[in-house]
Amino acid sequence: MRFGKWLAIAMLLLSAGACSSAEPKPESVRTWSNPVTLPDEWEEYGLGDPFIFAFNGYYYLYVSTRDTDAGIKVWSSPDLVDWTYRGLCTEDPVTTAAYAPEVRYWNGRFYMYTSPAGNGHYVLESESPVGPFRVATDNFGRTIDASTFVDDDGTWYFYYAGTGGIEAARMNSPLSVTAPGSPTGAYMDGWTEGPTVFKRNERYYMTYTGNHVFSNGYRIDAAVSESPLGPFEPFEGNPVLIRTEGETVGLGHNSLVTGPDLDSMYMIYHNLEGPGIVGPLRHMNMDRLFWNGETFTVAGPTDTPQPAPALPVFADRFERDSLGKSWITSGTGEWSVDPGKGAGVRAPDSPDIALLRTKSKTEPGYTAEFYVRSESEAQAESRVGAVFSYRDEQNYGTVWLIPESGRMELTERSDGRERLLGSAALPADFDYSQWHKIRIEHTAAGSTGNARGVGNAGNDGRAGKAGEAEKAGDAGSAGSAGSAEIRVYIDEMRKFAGPASTGGGAIGYAAAGLDGRFGYIAYSNDVNGSSDGRVYRPLPGQVQAVHYENGKEGKAYHAVSKATADGKLPYRPGALSLKSREDGGYVLSVQEGIW
Image (tube, rainbow, N blue to C red):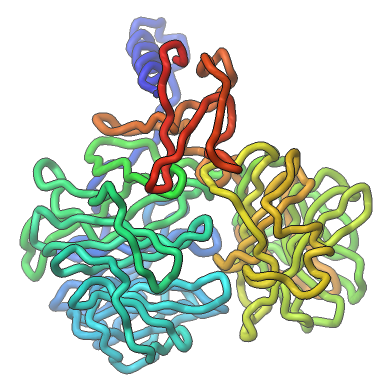
C-alpha cells in the first residue's frame, strides 16, 4: 500500500536533476546487496551456513570451514552491514571442516556447537565471542547442524538433523545432551537440516532447510508449535524462501537475528554459486521478515540494493573515557567510564539509588535493551538494573537483578510511591558478576503492534507465589483499557508480561548497595514488529494489505466504514477493520475509497 509514496519519491529524485547545482542534493540512502562477500573469507568456499548473533552492541558472524582446513573464522559488525574480520576464533584440529558453527552466550561463557565434516558434534567454549574457543566435550554424535534454544524457564533444547526430519532433545547443561531425540514434525519428505528455533508471543517457531546443498532447489521452510519439542506444524505458505533460477539460487541454512533497531528481524542464509575447489562455493545473504499476526513472510530473495537495517533512535557502547553530554546522573554514587569495560558506578553500602539516565526520551511505545553486571559483593538489599520510562525522580520504572534473593523484580514509581509490578526467580546458577541482557518491550495503551494478547508471566511464566499477583497489580490479566503493556526479558527469557501505567521517558541504569558495570544500551520507538507497517518493501514482491502505512485518518487512509475486530486484542488496532485467518494471520478487506 506504499506504491504511490515510493513512486512520488522516485519522481522527486528525478526532478531534482533539473534543479540548480546550488540546491542541496537529496540525502543518499545507505544500502547493501545480496550476495555478500567479505574480506578474508574462505577462498573458493565462501561464506556457507552463516550464523549471526548479537552481544553487547555488536553482531558476530561465523561460517562453515573449508574441508581441507582447521579453524573457524569470525567477523563483527555494529550494524549488520559493515563487517570487520576478527581472525580465527579457534585453530584446534578438531575443527577441520567444521560445519555450521553456532554460538550461544550463557552466564559469562560463549558456547560453540559444530559438527566437523558432518560427523557428530563437539562443544567449544570461550570467554569472548572472538575466541579463543577451546574444545570442551568429546564427540557426542547427533549427526549434523546443531542449534540450541533456551526457554523462559531456563531449560535448554538441542535440535539437529535426523533421518526423518529435525529432531529435538532436552539438554542437561550447555555442555551435555543425553536425552534421546524425538521427531519434531519438521520434515521436507527428504533430507532435512539446518534448524533454528525461537519464541514469539508464546509460540515456538522453527525454520529449516531441505533438498541437497548442491541443488538449485535448496530451500527454507517454517513451522510453528505450542511446545519446544513439537509437534511443529508447517506454514501453509511454505517454502518461505526459494529460488531456482536467476542471480541467486540454492538458498538455505539460515539463522535469524534482530536488527539494530531492536524491532525488525532478518533472515541470514547462503546461496549456491557452484562447486568450489573443495565443497560448494556459497555466499551470505540477508533479507527482512515481515510479521502478520502469528505468521511471517520473508521479503526475498533480493539481489538488488536494499536499504540498510534501521538503527536505534539512541545507542551507546561507552567506548570512551567519560560519560559525555548525553547523560544525567542523580542520587548517590560515583559514575565513570572505562572504554574497555563500559560505564561503571561505585554505589555506597546503603539502600539509596545511584541513577544514570539519558537526556533523550522514548515515545510511549518502544523497545530498549541494556547490559548489566555487578562488580562487588552483594548485601541483603543490594541490586543492579535498568531504568525505563523516566519522567522525573518521582515517576519511573526499574528492572532490578537482586543477587541475594536470586530474583528479578519489576518496580514502578508513580508520584513518589513505588509498587512491585512483578517478580520472577532467576536460574540457580545465575552469575550476577557476568554480563546479562535486559530487554524491555513497552507497548503503548491501545496498541498491540504485531503481538497477540499477553498473559501472566510472573514467576518464570507461571502463576506467582501467594500474594505475588496482588503486589503486581493483577499482572496476570491482559491489561485494561488505557494501560500500557510491558514485557521484560532477562537473557532472552521472558520474566514478566502485564499492564503498567508508565509511558515514554528516559532510559538508563541504576544500582543500590553495590558497584555495577554497564554495557551497551539502546532504544527504538518501535515494538512487537510495529516498524513492519512503514518500511521499504522490495519490488517485484508481495506487500500484504495489513501492513498499510501508519498515519492519521484522512491523511494516510480514509476509513469508509467503522472498524471492527474479531479478537479481544486486534492486530494493529485502529480505524481499519481486520479479520483473522485460520493460520493465525490477518487480512484487510480493501474497499474503494480507503486509499
